[in-house]
Length: 191
Length: 248
Image (cartoon, rainbow over all chains, first blue to last red; front, side, top):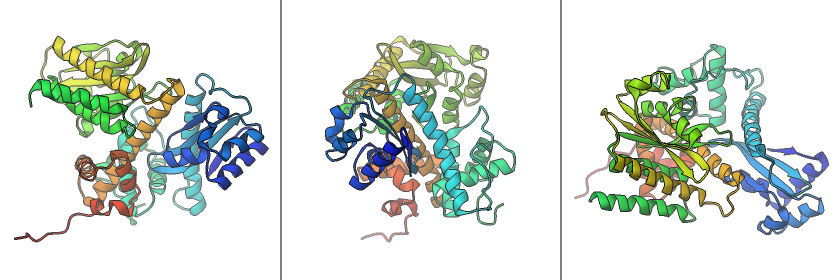
């Protein structure tokens, strides 16, 4: 799953290029799990001997690829490009990271809904209140536990956790705490 | 091992950050453990800031849930946040007297059994990337020697983390920290999966992960990813050991 940001036609070609060649900032970011920021393709392009010159022909000078993931849950990569070289503007990367985080959740929910239309996970990513005391670690631990309890992927487990919180109008952190304390179990008989 | 030897080991470990195969999370866990070993403190933890200037607990001397909660609370108010924003040390904060300053944190820390908390900035010149958090159960000040040693460890850790990149641009630092945070989340997910599969607590699960990584020479983050995804390469870890007959 690639989200592109920039001139649409060029973005499509850039994605095609990386997919066909199997190399580029996008694949690297997806595989490595870390952002790959290339402010000047002319300088660092040697890393991708087929991709770099082809991207240059398209007029692309800078590429920024951010993995879309929550821990071990990876849904794809966000790739932005620019026709002028240079790093992301002040705060630009922080914004891109925030966008990537929001988009990742959105995609996880969309993928789950697509696989199970009208199912028990009918909830948007904004649902499920997150209060000031989001004890994040427990949310991720609960995700792992639910994944093992239901025998589903981590992505699906996270969706189920959030859906449960939304359905009961509870904070995600609260539900997660109950799961970790083993007071709440997501066996198939649940819900 | 004498204190000097332990200290020397701690600095050698910090120098290890300069090799290619460096695992930030593993390093920070070791650093936290070293602090408890070398200083007169009962718990330690490292908080790193993400691209938005938000502090996250990245490693702690123990995976105790209540300790981790103390770090999470500091995202809003606490010694770490102050140290991170000012770049100055926050030492000898008597929790009893800090109720107004950091209400929720002071209350939770005292409930957990700590009497004082300290935060040393992770700082290189004008760049502050986070803070080293220290907790003491006994009341009273942290000795000057301990503050100096703690700061020295924090400084070396900071240099090690920042030295990972050839050009010190803000983006590259954020990338490294983003990866550290992703690793952290993956570890939490793995703890959950393992705790459920083996029917153990998440704390026990973490101990198992660390031991397995060490025994099989794996990066903790890599192992965590395998376990979180329930991949077959981590099969022996995900299932309880079979009863073995004693060899004679």
